[in-house]
Image 1: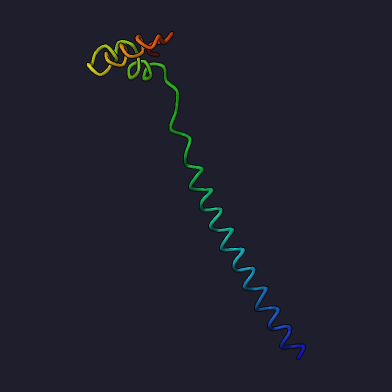
Image 2: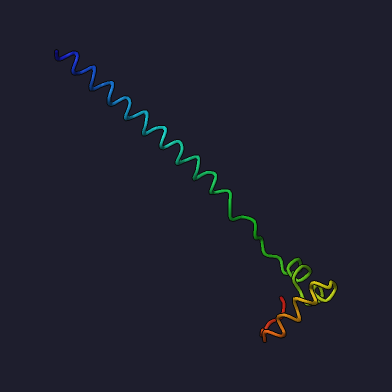
Length: 80
């Protein structure tokens, strides 16, 4: 009787431990996946100006539309 009760208890606890370990693994894997985000923006003024600056906007038709739209709206800063 006592041995049967002990075996049942051991089986239940091993199941619980296994579930906790699998949950901990899935949480750590998802945290590791999320940790890879956020390093994309490395500030560089020259690249910023070349891509989003006033002269870059003037060079293309869509850029001139952006400038006109921002002027019409009354923006203090048209571009970078």
